[in-house]
Image (tube, rainbow, N blue to C red; front, side, top):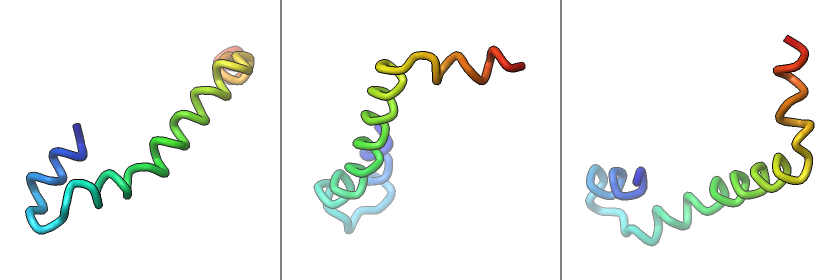
Length: 50
């Protein structure tokens, strides 16, 4: 949704350019999600220490 907001604010940039700029963030989000799914102890360690 943020991609379309950026596109509406910045008229002279193509939407494909915006999507290419977002790809690294999407990849890191997928990797982080995969890490938390494969090692759930990472998600529960810090709250258990408080």
